[in-house]
Image (cartoon, rainbow, N blue to C red; front, top):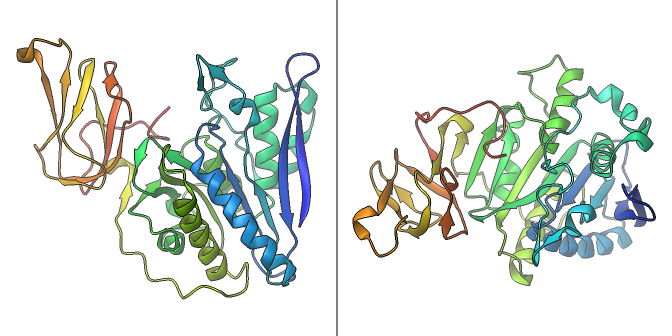
Length: 353
């Protein structure tokens, strides 16, 4: 293993950010897939950090035994800028406080052949812009790209571009995902910027990309961080790497993925119609029918006649739920994966800002 680092100069004097990068050289680098893994691009999402910490220990042992076939690059904590942002005692790792931009949006949309252009004139870029360009540059040198995130309260699931499906079902199986969201490649999020770059080399939108993968993995909720769950997810990533021929052996053959794969247009984003305290009646993993009571909102405590019920718009699986217990008007309460297209409509791209 070789340790490297990305250094990002800050936007104020005498400040810089150092991002450790771990590189494992494969014994069959010319033929085995090349892998890029990162976690905590949203800096306050730590399940992936713990998972990669465990995976790196296993990869070190495999490296010593000569069992790593393909090159593997790991950025276990990808966003120290966001990690340093604390507001009234709480890390604000999703949005840059200076620009108000989401750290997982606005990645450059370029062709893969223009990869090296990402590093041209970096000195005129802000620190968050430079961070995004450095990370994207490294990812575009790989065949398999996994960006590890988490949701609020959530089942394990992933956003997978339909260009990689159903080949990517091996990842869903390895990580024992409860659902897959099939995305449309219409956003500037990290994993879609990678797939966009590859698509430009293969004819553009609508192509399939066999042998490649760029995916956002949602490792449950923000509080699902611990030794047991990290070890289990690290074992899942190891099984995926074995299945793809990146590392040698040590895992049983993967069972076929038998969970649901939902198109984004069939995801019901259940929102709060009024502000108030949230009383949830259904939890993640529940299957609901149309009209089932999901939550009650209490806008006027002490006046129960003003309570507002929130009901399921159609049958489906509750994949995520807000960890907050107070909602502003139109805050997201749940994501429900359904069989039918939502009547609420959806703009192209990501489900959330």
